[in-house]
Length: 255
Image (cartoon, rainbow, N blue to C red):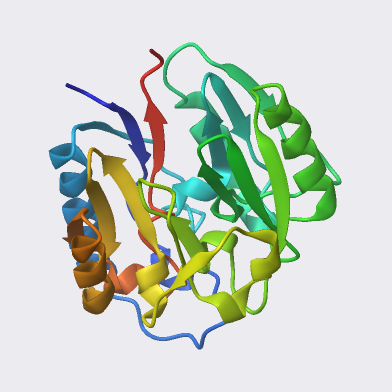
């Protein structure tokens, strides 16, 4: 059974010029990154997703991080307005790739919103505010998602690029987090992890959970909690503050 569409975008020729904000710049091997991206795609396909390419945006170094341009909630697609102005050229091709029959809305100025700041856990949505996403973008998203029965909460960030740089959720709603990087008071109880990459997971169906090869101890923890870690090497993307969440937008089938 096909679970839905996984939107991805291949690394472009300028990947090594991508923005880094909270880490030091190190050399990125684009050829290795492309091989790692192929492995990432294969993991999604192996979990039952129809992997589809968004049109290229070769002038945009960060375009591979497609998650930041689109938020999908049921039959609603929210096209974002990225907080980094140089990333806004990525949006049009993602909008054109939205699969199925969905209502499409946009975040508009002065609002900014990156999809990496949006964590959906059941009918509750947490939004990181203070980095790439501002209060106006949060308010617009809250209003859009309220029409789909979602309760939306703002979460302050500390020294991380996005909310999902510091917390994501397992299939049962358990939050894996780096508690010192966000306002945990805005969240239900979290399960702290020791590895930075350990707080980045993507539930891909059934008990399977995508996790980076750089978090082996957390992968073992995920297994002990009863889930099936699907380990992918994304080391070149981690040099650009990327993680397993930001390389795709999962668009589930509308039942």
